[in-house]
Amino acid sequence: MKKIFYPEWINSIPSNDGVLEETQKLAREELKQNGIPKKSSEEWRLTNSAFIKEFFNLPLNSNNTKLKLNRIDNLRRSLVKLEFNNDSIFEANLCNGIEKLSEEEIKLCLSENSIRRKDFYDFNKTINEASNNRLIGFKINSKEIKSLEIDIKAEVSELVPTRVIIIVEEGLEVDILEIIEGSRGASHSHLIEIYIKDFSTVNHAIVSIGKDSAKLMASILVNQEKQSNYSLTCIQKGWTFSRLEQKVIQLNGNAKTNIQGLQIANNQQELATHSRVRFNGPNGYLKQIQKSILDDESHSIFNGMIEVPKIAQRTEASQLSKNLLLSSKAKVDTSPQLKIIADDVKCNHGATISQLSNEELFYLQSRGINIKKANQLLINAFCNEILDNLPIQESTWSLLSKALENIKSQ
Image (cartoon, rainbow, N blue to C red):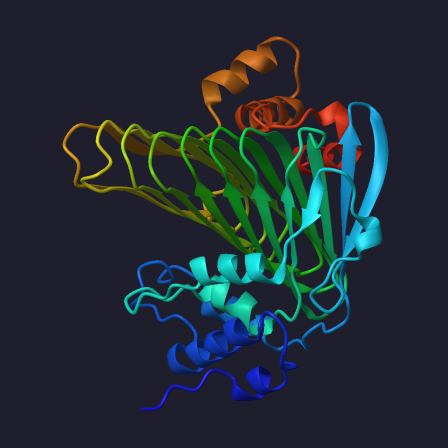
């Protein structure tokens, strides 16, 4: 039986004749051949396919979606605006320390991340490549740039794709904050690729807040070179459906990675995180913790894979999934996994599912705290282990502060 994946939707996408032309053609062919992922696929068997189909019931946003980056120098703010506009960045809006990628550099990045494996169908990434007619690509090449704030909003009933490529040159340290907001029934497809050169440190946070039946599919692709440090904190709240895919590769080992995640869901929301970390050299390090708080009939999914091939001797990696159920009808599917070939490693993983402690609630009530406040204190304590690890000071980032206030109000 011939597989056809919404040909009307695919054919409605404006063709790209620029740097994305070849990538877009390959992605569209892949969608036609493979269609929506089947339940037989391990990474998609728990996903409600109705949510995926709803992505393509909306028209594609073909306007020049604006994306703002705020350059922040200590407590003094200077706004730098970069915009999607036919695959280019307005030169006048660039500043010292940020340089637009050349067409050749973009093509090299695209080719590195477009290697397709016949046994692995990267649906999240392919959807973005098929529908996206514009990207923003730049490199940070100066210590002048300490912090970047990326603010993306999807506020109309359309499928809105965005794509960002960032190269962090050697020996730099930078904080990158992404705020993704969705409302009014919007569907958002986001892809960010970060290349971290030798001896550089990147502290990356994604705070994604949805409402009004908004949906999100996002992919984070990170390549780390030697002696680099990468920290990622992802927060999901309020989306009817959200799927984050994290793929981190330590290209030659000798690097450090820290990943934290928090999902907060209620009603019938489905929030998923799929994580894959691969060590392609020795002396790698990973610490990962994923948390979820679930109420009503919500559903949380965590699928984590740590790959340690034979070349990755003396790797140290840990992965932990912790889940808090506030309702007997809420559902958690968690699967931390290790795939180890190397024999000289220290690796462990684990998962816990619990409810609010009656003993702790009783203790707080015995100190004069009412039951509602006691519940909130325990929930906040569960969240704070992740929120306190955000790589950016809350007092410095007004937009982040507002988002965290929204999360803590759960």
